[in-house]
Length: 177
Image (cartoon, rainbow, N blue to C red; front, top):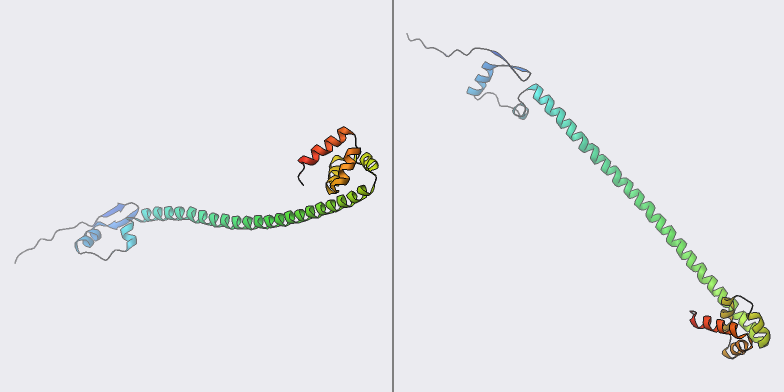
């Protein structure tokens, strides 16, 4: 009879990173190919390592989730503000159009009044018209003279004081019609 000597593998309790494992089990797993390891077992060598890694993963995904949520909130806020700005721009454009319309109406009314006043001053004697036009606002006098017939305006300017007629003529020549 032959005696076979089997290697004795001491069963030792080994403390590895917070987990208790039998060295014999580990040795047996290595030699026999052992049970198939899951991705978790391959990723983490111990329970403590797994706990630390999971806490790190939880902490790292949390700021990204918060940042993503904050970014979405800021996008929504920007969209809301953009729509408010667009509404304000539309309101301002409507106001601008209203003001332009009122200015055009006012200018037309002033033109009509100047035309009517021109007719009145044309019917006056040149001396009376000259004395009145010499005392009223210069811009109004120019507007009235501009609406008059050339012959009537010339008679009135001829009847005015020289300095006043010169001022009106100069302003009339540089004024945009």
